[in-house]
Image (cartoon, rainbow, N blue to C red; front, side, top):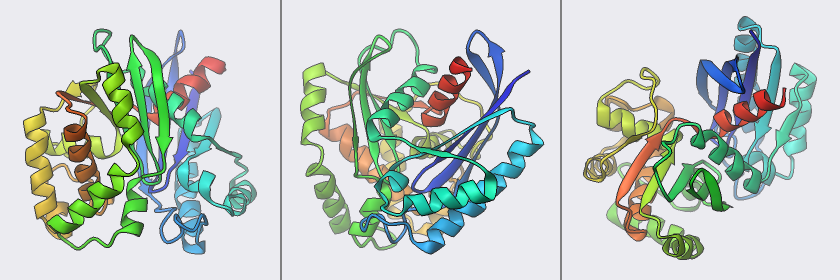
Length: 307
């Protein structure tokens, strides 16, 4: 049985997915883990990786390397996204990874990232969903894909990720209404094109994939993080609104005690919830679908199909 590993080096987290091929191009997930790295902290608006961020990234990758060895993986693919593609010194990080672990990192474009997100998400979606807007909220960028009948109609990556917001706008704990208004204004300046596209394609359904949407669903279902295997399912809008109102009212300590809250998301989940609420209202969305599949599943699907 062939085993494969995909590592997705993001702006906030470094994600490992290990799977085995089940034949006919499909796969079974054996291991799925996220480690905090905050690769963009302090440097994302300067287009550099700070030395402590590079150190955190190396530590996470070495932890993942130990896991990969335990699973006796045959083939590995490592990709880098927003923080690495935007940093002028990303080659320093990539060279250190090559020297210490022997791995090559493929830094992908925002366009390719959106395509691979769709590839992963599409593995989990029902055939009768209709036209939808797939949204992946990252630390450095947010990817949007309009899809219909399992085909991409439009896609774009915007450099408006949650880590960028936190570096650009001072946020108290808990957040204030005035700060929420500033965050919404920040997003408004960037998303006129998205509004036009969604009106053109008459989008009324959002598919939120992985990341913050996993946490929203865990809080809704009162499940501990990563304890429940899921497929795509609906998160009622009124339930999301309750969660969002709760998140913006709590400070970090009380957020961290919520059932379903993943520790690595305590800091950024508030801005992610503000963005999601803003987006749902701005686009007049009627249905919110959650899927745990996203970029790393898309890369895994590609890796296995090419082998």
